[in-house]
Length: 271
Image 1 (cartoon, rainbow, N blue to C red):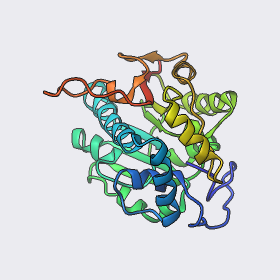
Image 2: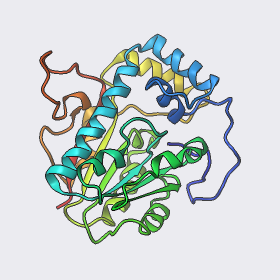
Image 3: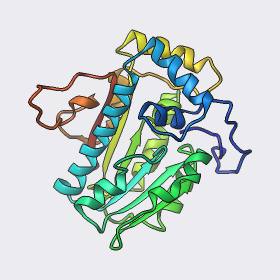
């Protein structure tokens, strides 16, 4: 999620430049999607020349989202989700996962890429008992997000807050923590945070990000797993804690445990 369409205060800015790679569109390319431009594909390929495992990471994050949302909807009983930095629509979006468990689930998506906005109709295919909405806004404007999300979500009831690959675009830990606190403060006890980001445990990925960040795109900061885990301070962290997303409650497989990837994440409850 970046500043392409909105300033931090929510003020509209100029249309996006298709000649500048954008993280949401590169991610879409790594997942095998079609909603990307030559600059995005070139940046994605250049990244993979240094770190070939990135498509595997992208798939692992997608599967982590599915398992976390299913857990919250099925085991915890959460019926509301706020997905910030959702990216481009793909297979098994948050509302599809949640409404498969509970058709009455209500989901609000947030992103600020104009291409995501153009495809938002794919995120609004709710089941009749439930609801979906899309907000064109920046994570740096949490009050704007919360005000708009209140049209669909009831903040007196628990909410699943989803932040996948977003906080790494905010390089200052204090600023990132402030944004997260402002979002969590608006949610009642029983709400859950689902958060993941890339970490600095792989030297090849570090080098790939260094080159990516120097190419004009919005920088993406790799934190250590320990720094990432601090985002869950004050919350009740669910087992197995902050781990490689492929290792967060993996589904049984005859092929043994999944390979570890360098994006870490976790799920935690607000008490």
